[in-house]
Image (tube, helix red, strand yellow):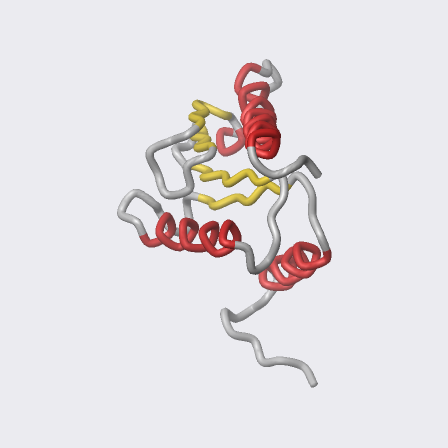
Length: 134
């Protein structure tokens, strides 16, 4: 992991730009894709709550991307991340069920593996609040 301060900031910017480059490459790719996968525009440092990258697709839906090279549960950055996701989700520009929030992580620890597992379980749940198994 890079040292704190300037090198860490630069590593984070590099990671964010690398993620944006993936979507820019998709936008320039001549491969025929369904309208919901065809990238129309990519904006970095957007004037939105989730501001790292905003990707707009040909069908009109947007993906708000937060890119972090390294983050830990309990850090200020972790709490801020979820505050921004919440603010974006309830904001007047966000269309629930159409637009998407994405979290791209460069490195992870076991807490993020737990989060990934929880997200995978939630995506297949029949109900918002499923009873816990004992």
